[in-house]
Amino acid sequence: MREVAVVGVGSISAGPQVLASLANYFGERPISVTLWDGDLERLDLMARLAEVLFSLNKCEYPIRMEPDLKAAVAETKHVIWLPDENCHRKAPNLVEEFALHASPGIDLLCLATELEPSLEAFWRYEWPAPLTEAETREMPLQVLRWIRAEDYPWALLKQFERSPVVSWLDDPFVGDFVSRSAESA
Image 1 (tube, rainbow, N blue to C red):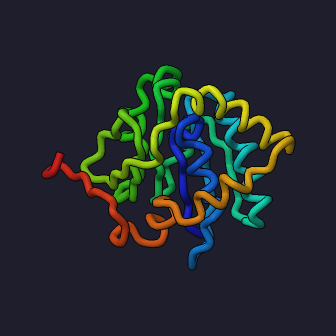
Image 2 (image 1 turned 180 degrees about the horizontal axis):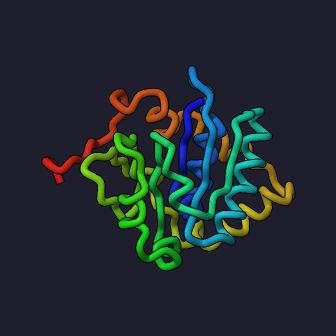
C-alpha cells in the first residue's frame, strides 16, 4: 500500500479539493492517507470531510489524522504540500521541521501555496484556482454542511475526478507539473 501524506490539509482554499481528488483515486496500488495540519481544529474538520468523501465514493483507503508532523511524514514517500497562512501561523517552523523529518527521496507535490518546502527537488503545480472572496467566506460553512450530511458533496467529487492530484499519483511525468530542483530554483 502506498502511503500519501497531506501536509497543510486544513487549507480552506485547497484542502477540500485535494481530499475530493484522493477520494477519486482508484489507481493500480491502493493508498493510505495521513492528514496533518498545524491547526488541530482544521485537521479534525478535514479528517471528518475525508471520511465523508471516501465513504460516498466507496473508497476504502484508510485515513489517519496525525497531529505530529514527524510521524506524518517520516515513513511516506508521497507528500502533498498545501499549507496556508493559518497553518504557518500555528506551526511557524513548518518548513524547517518538514525538511528535517521528510524521508530521503520523497516524491513531493507542492500545490498553490506561497510557502515552499526547503527541499532540493519537488513537483510544483498551480492548482486549485484561488477561491473568490465570497467562496473563501462560504467554504468553511459548506464543509460543515457536507460533514453533517445537510448537503452532499457530489458536485465536489465530480469536479475533481480527473484532478492533477490523481494524475500525479498515477505518474508525475505525464502531467503539466513543473519540476523544481536546486538547479532550477
